[in-house]
Structures are given as C-alpha cells and as structure tokens.
Image 1 (cartoon, helix red, strand yellow):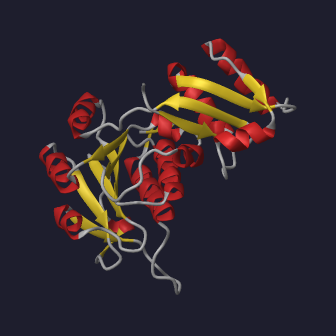
Image 2 (cartoon, rainbow, N blue to C red):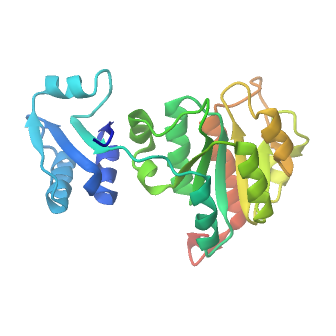
Length: 253
C-alpha cells in the first residue's frame, strides 16, 4: 500500500485539489462551515471528482492533532521527493536563465514553507535542499507554503556539494550568503543563470557548501542584530535578484 500524508489548511488542500487531485484519497470538512472559502473548496473538489465528507471538528482534530487545520483536512498519497537525476533535465528545459534557490540544511518546517511561498512569488524555477539533516515536504510545510509546495519543484539531493558542482558545470553562478562576506547583496550581479544559496538557522552555510560558491555576499545590517531569520533573508535576496532581472512586458522575467 502506498504511503499517505495529511494535508491541512485551506490553501494547502485547495492547491492539492487544483494541481494533483488524483493523489487525494480522503477529504474531510468541518460540519457547520459554509463560508465562501469552504464553498469554493467544495466546488473544486466536486469538479475534480473528489468526495467530500462532513465530520465534527473532533474528527478533524484526531486526523491532524495539534494543527491549525482551518476546518479542512485531506489525506494524500505521498510522493517521493525529486532528486538530482531529475534536476538537470528540468534545467535543460528552461527557456530563460535558471533562477534557483538552495537551502543548506533548513530544519524548521515553518521556515521551509515560507521560503517555498516566496520562491513561488519570485518565479524561482526550483528549490534544492539536502536529504540529510534538513526538512522535507511535511504537512506543516505545505500549509505554511500556501500552495507553493505544489507549484515550485522541490529537490532533495544526497550530496549537495556534488550537486552544486554540477550546477556550475551547467553554467549557473553560485551565490552564497555569509554574514562575514565583503560583497554586499546589492553590489552583486544576480542577472544571469543563478543559484542563491542560504544556510541553516543559526549556523549558516556548511564549509563544503561555502567553498563551492562562486561568490559570497552579505546582507547590510544597520542595527544591533547580527543576522536574520532564513526565510526573511531568502525573501530579501530573491527579490533583489528579481529586481535586477527586470521587467518583461509588464511582468517579471
């Protein structure tokens, strides 16, 4: 029997219904909820041929204990994460310069979900993370990502340093963040094929990851704090890259 996982929250479940309804094996909605967002979700489910079951709130709590499910829980068939073998074909298929986000050992699911959400908003082609000592696509990640976990390709690789070397061989510029770097984010060229690399909460980039980078950059810190949350730093870096890459026909490239 295939492994399953629990999705919870309106955005995560709606995204699954819109993008991968065939994976949904069960969908439960709290009895008594008939607001607009719930009605829209039910309409999407019916259009996708997914059966909706109305259940008491207590039944949802049992399926998603301790989670803010917003009155909706779904069970879906778990998919294995994409790996390095699938990454290079994706890059070869791009019709524009690659725009990648690499997260070196982010373990907090809320941070990973927030990074995926920002990556989607910024038009990132893929997010890459190591398999070991890093968070994968959990139900909490999917909820925080608000649908982005279904739209942004997420790759988990067994050897991040090797993957970074292969990205370099493919002509992608590796830009890592480091609090002690001499180059300012806003002085770096982020316009070509690019992988922005951010480290784990607290310890930053690992040594091998840092050594693989073509350049290290720092974020200007004008106050008393010395570092930012990784999801906040990710947002700043991605949108500076987006700014530099410019507008095309009224839309960001």
